[in-house]
Image (cartoon, rainbow, N blue to C red; front, side, top):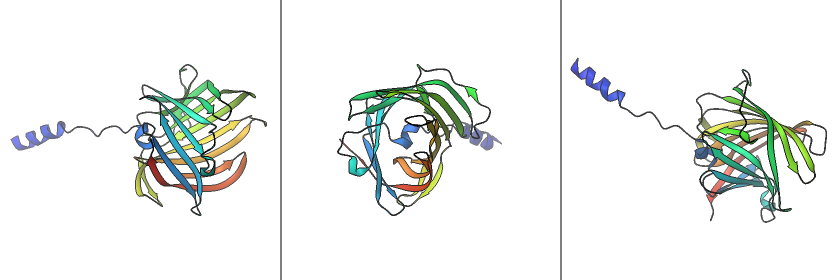
Length: 234
């Protein structure tokens, strides 16, 4: 009886597993980079994070052939508490910064049901929970992006799934989280669905572990790519 009590007491003091956080999967706090290749193994895209302190970071995506040109569409992220917020987009070719501001946001379950409004955070978009929940959740944001050419209206729907194991072509079994997103805008065309895709993020590896796009530039596609190389830069 005494042995059972001692064992029970010891088990009660076993620390709970540490909560996993978004930066472990995105690698946004490191000067990290990666190359994504298509199904034929051809370099298709490249990404790199540029941290700006402990709670801010900028990511650039571009075709590898364009990497030495000034980058456009650099996404600026800000962490505050248990949320990572998207603030806007920077175009180095023109020297402009395009702030993005939401007019409404909702959060719901993994089926995008049971939606509830999210309080405003100075108009910045709630992009992802910092501490990764055990259940999938949905985010829907609507708002505008101010550009030199005029104001663009957008709608962004995301579903984030809890960590699991992804089987990958180049890295074997990897701890991963999945983002499924759809994007609507009226940037030079009627308001319409422009992007629909899923992206897996690999723990300790970063962005683009696996990507599948079903809508691109407003047209149905079936495009797949996987993360091949990752590195850090100075």
